[in-house]
Amino acid sequence: MKYIAKIITIIFVVLISGCSIFYGKRAPVARPTPLTTYKPSIHVKQRWATSTGVGGASQKLPYQAAVANHEIFTVDDKGEISANRTTSGRVIWQKRWPVPISSSPAAANGLIVFSTDQGKLVALQQTNGKLAWQVKAPNEIIAAPVIADNTVVVKTIDGVLVAYNVKDGKQLWRYNHGTPVLVLRAAGSPTISGNVVIAGFADGKVTAVELSSGQVIWERRITLPQGGLSIEQMVDIDAKPVVKDNVVYVVTFQGKLAALDLAS
Image (cartoon, rainbow, N blue to C red; front, side):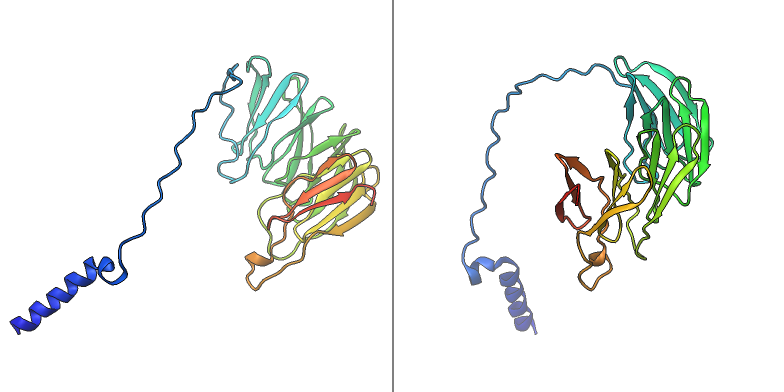
């Protein structure tokens, strides 16, 4: 028995130490490339810094600021709203909204506009933060509103575009696109170019409608669902379309990039 135990011990030692015995020497490990010396060509100086809340931490969404008339407006998902000077960061006014805020703000026409997690669209006066108007949207909005030509356009999480009069919040038109059963909890804002509103949707389509009426101008499918897994079949367009030189650029959740003629 002692002889057998010795044999087993020898075999065990050989196995745990022995890649070099059976397979030869290990391949040499490549050394990392030395870092080059970096000398900045421009020295960036911080002008000011201040705290404006927690952003979209609990919503797991990126919140962006809006800038208008030398003022910067920020919101967070706890309901904190701030207006600061762009030149100094000095607080002009702050207020706490009674319910969580679900989208980044837009600022134009003397108003800042944002949405709440109760599905309401809210407009405040830029000068003092007082309520200008608020309306009930068809569903939750997590994409920032866009404002042009006295019109506020929003896209709801279930694929509805709605336009409101910027002065009083009166609904002007509504376009129902719809969504697949499974979608990402993310939504890119529409883009306005002239009298055209361009929006991407969770079914992989891009739609252009008239800003003045909501009538569909054109619609294009960018990608089709593929694969057997649900995650593979998600084709959401959740990045805000970009318009440059009458070309619309869009990208899908799966990374497909497309360029479309604005007039098509």
